[in-house]
Image 1: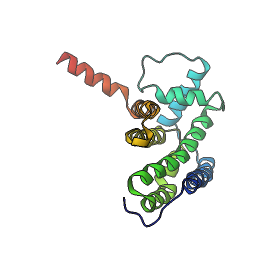
Image 2: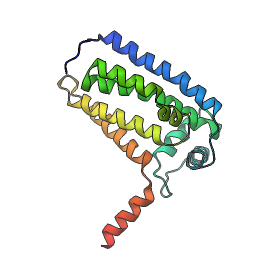
Image 3: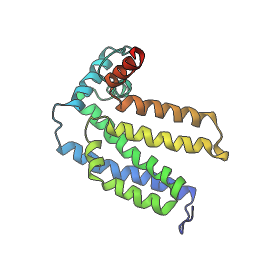
Length: 194
């Protein structure tokens, strides 16, 4: 990793915090001026709200349950089902920028990390998805965080089982957030039946 710029720990922390606080207002503005049409996002938001009203282990359904559990827990804080998942995704979308920066800083150095994070900060699809109740932003956050924790647990100075656990947790959440379970069930049934 050859980089013309070097960054201190304090500078890195400032950039991580600044990215979050630059991303959050932009995504909040988009969330406040847009209305989500009835489709997968609001359907999942209502599903999470109903789960929060009567928590149980989800054993069947069209979608795997991680997003329902996570946004259902968040709906304990904000009870409005139309708003809670959108606010959750706005926060998670903003946090994604900070983790993305840390991942790219570790792999490519400060120049690439700054430029790539600035692009993601203003990327219209990321801003728009962060303002919806769709699962894509939660998936992206868990994916980027999972990769970052995987790299952290492979570093000699960070050999700690907590990074391994965090890697597996984020990988599991990413898989369970985006995957459509009926396809998995049909595929496994096909494999079993030959």
